[in-house]
Amino acid sequence: MTDTLRTLYPAIEPYASGHLDVGDGHVIYWERSGTPGAKPAVFLHGGPGGGFSAAHRRVFDPALYDVTLFDQRGCGKSTPHADLNANTTWHLVADIERLREMAGVEKWQVFGGSWGSTLALAYAQKHPERVSELILRGIYTLTKAELDWYYQFGVSEMFPDKWERFLAPIPQNERHEMMHAYHRRLTHADKAVRMEAARAWSLWEGETITLLPEPATSGKFGDDAFAHAFARIENHFFVNAGWLDEGQLIRDAYKLKDIPGVIIHGRYDMPCPATNAWALHKAWPKADFHLIEGAGHAFSEPGILDQLIRATDRFAGKV
Image (cartoon, rainbow, N blue to C red; front, top):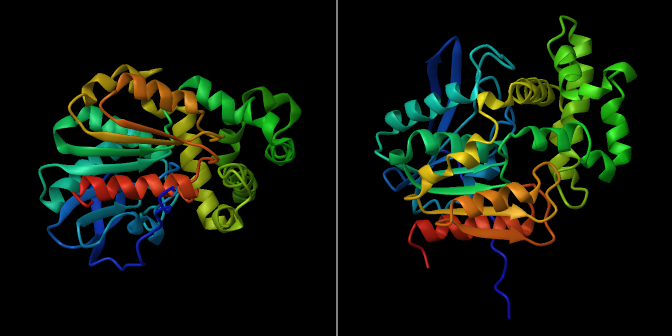
């Protein structure tokens, strides 16, 4: 007999929220939910440029956790909206440290999915002494092979109808470098050009992250304000390979050797091929590894969500 799949905790409102000036003209929105002074954790959203949602508060038992969530530079309620200036992986790593200091904790659990897993790995490898545990979902290490697979050739073969819509804003003679062709449009002076590209970029992702069509998940990707920040920031990070050396996050996984962790990945994750989760598992054997059958990429996939909540419960000492 199999255990019942775990689902989100009941909806909860933050007990505190505010804005933190992190310099460079950026002000990030943060909030804390759960029980003040309980087990500290920080939630790192995907994208980059995706922002967090109310559902993300609900993977933590509010009686046992004190969770910090924040919108990374340029997205969600952080300002200036969709701004690319001083917006890099290492700026965000520094922002996480500022938030930790603001929370007044020595170390905390770091929870990240998709791009959030990339950022969590970068943060944990730079500040391993500040991480009590790592919970990672949808592993993405920003190698050239991963970027090409999703934006040049690979996933295009699985979703030819959606790929055709992704190609549409780009002339034939620029399609050999799709990320750079999009970059030119997402940074264009004409807002109409930016928005056409932003919608196409954003919907390509929104409609390929779940195993089966899931309008509740993909719907927000067509929203103009969301798409503008999401597409601009994500593309900006990706054309710059996240300001990471090729293969850096797997190369430096040895720095995680003393950190307990969990790696959770969908077998049929299209944006993030499972081979990278497997490589991280081999490089960081201390972490538990769960390859979820019948699951794509999204946080909302039932088997993935089940393991995420089991992980937060276990690390809080809940049986």
